[in-house]
Length: 348
Image 1 (tube, rainbow, N blue to C red):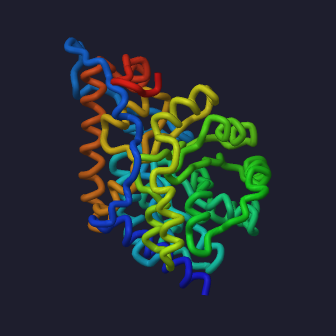
Image 2: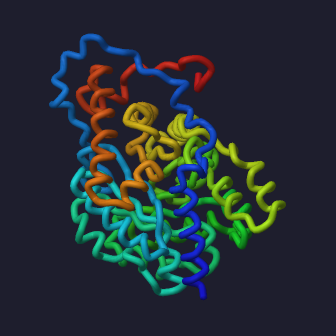
């Protein structure tokens, strides 16, 4: 059955990412090549720094996104409940994992309007794979996914590398851009184009924006490598060797963010992919991101409780606040002007 096959794959992904010995993080996010100029006279009160901003028509108390993690398994319902409750409590955005199983098997595993009831005030985004757009997911099906959640936007994840090295992955990517353009025109909510850890280049971002995509999540390298995840799922040694050759493949998050911002100066950007802490998030905001996203770092807490997720992101938010304080930035607009310089060879 489609449900059994997809659920088994999603469970594999969760188990591998959660395994502390799995070592699925590869590459560098690029933020270590950059450093803020320290301000020894901030002339600010730390507690009065404003991290708020608007996104998708809603107000956020901090510029953070709980990035898409999981969908299609029974335990995903519990995970997403904890994430939604935490996002609402903190005033940050939430993107759910793939809703593909809901379309193909009719099983939602908690990806329902209950999430909107748990998180009525935050930006909430649905999710479907780019390859599914040429495999039967049109406007009506995509609209179902949005309505299931009362979502503010739909993420279309672009993961050609993962699909190429995944046993049984989607190999045909012809026509994805045309399908995206049609969906952007007809869906009625914004489309977010997101990679899953290999980055979006400036040239691809420009094509996506010209096709009507409203938001780009560059999702660069430096975090979970899905090539490594699929290598650990490989059925044969040959499949593993093919996948592992791409363990460090991709554009770093910082590089992708800087280049896409130059190519698409008016497009809202999200920086995910190896964002380790609030200092990385501050650098991402300075490079042009509206939001910084984390996924794997929050996943262990999401298995435990809402309180564990809140505790994790409260640390990230406080780190971001201190970064603003020590750059003399009273709000995010000021942070976007703070001096940020290469520490060596870097973005230039």
